[in-house]
Amino acid sequence: MRHIFYVIEPDPVVRLDLSTALPSQFPECQVHFEDALSEALRPPDGAHSCVLVNGSLPLGDRKDDLSACASRGISIIFIGTPKESFPNAHVLETPFTNRMILEAVTNAASVPPATRPEDHT
Image (cartoon, rainbow, N blue to C red; front, side, top):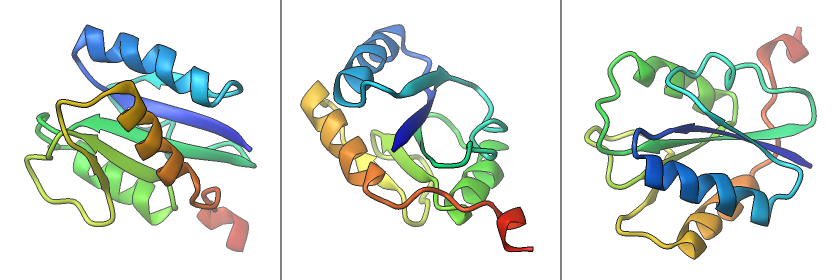
């Protein structure tokens, strides 16, 4: 199964850690550093998508997009306790290690691939 990770993280050190840690666990993965989640809402067929979000960021407009992602079966992982509660999201407490990141992503990735609503019409 192909994995696609969308990362919303302003810290360049954390971004660097994720850009090396994720491909080491999932060699065929794609890692996108985004501010918006529009691409995450349209995962390719046969891919598992996962969104990693810095928990200290205000969700604002992202909350609706995260809800839409979650309703499509896309995994949500907050890095650090989120400022706002969010149902069915995984939380990776800080400080964290690469191993903790990989465990959280592995657990989230065990969820079946997202099913798009248009597949049911």
